[in-house]
Length: 394
Image (cartoon, rainbow, N blue to C red; front, side, top):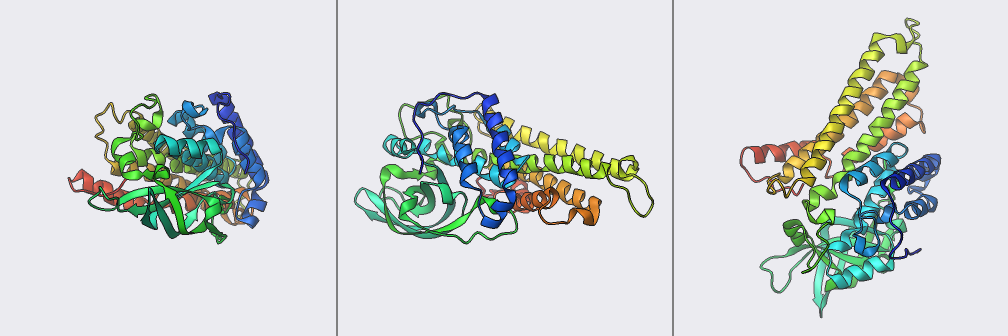
């Protein structure tokens, strides 16, 4: 696969957002093809690379622009205005490509300097057996988003290290050429994400390519004595910051739903009374309420980023469950906006392939991700509020 050059020229926020718009527009043009093929195209992936968005979260040491969390969120939201599947990968590729920043230096250099895209699956379903200075990894993992165009895949495994009392949560980095990809992605929504299954059979991974997620979560730092103290991801809780983009995908999609609703409503005349809907208190009220709900979701996600950025300044006191609850509440509001818009527009919005149908399916699909489940989030947050351990990671 095509590699990057390390030390490339930095890009501005404006250039990243302009690139996000190009990605989104291209993905929207190719939406029908992506639905049929169950993946975005090589054209869209090439644009994610060309615009430097794939490397936007890398430390400056490796030639990345080292974008902050707010810029990252804006990029994801912008792509989602046009196509949520493309936003899914415009979020996950740069996010996963920064994972080596938490590896030992030798492993980070190997993976990052190779230049390929990275995908991952956190579910700890694999097995590991010690072999010399590394481990042999086996297992089967589903929902591996973006694997079709990736060179590396991180896979969730519990590893029993000799010095550890119990197994440790890890993410070994494997070359995709060493696993079998099962093309089984046939879903209700987010079809363009190409989230296929992989199977690894006795794949050797050296220690320097095994990311210890327990340490990344606990320390928020790489296993190095000297590191870039300005790097944003070294000062925020690992999992809540990692899950940032799901809310902004839903937000960008809901923003587009509101635009579509307004356009379709302005043209609509109800047969039962002959009233133009843009002049009717019915649709005026619905649009007003959905728009104010959208502002609530937007403000919740602003709060989410503020809590992330001030996490260490605030004494690391924000519970993972609070991040979980805030993020999923914002996503739930976006789902409610999409459903209400469709129910208000009526049967005319049901036709397959239209923006309303596609965005509704994709927003609902974002909400089904394990990190977006609202009922799980509020149950966990409630436990913590009453002083019980929720056990969630964020």
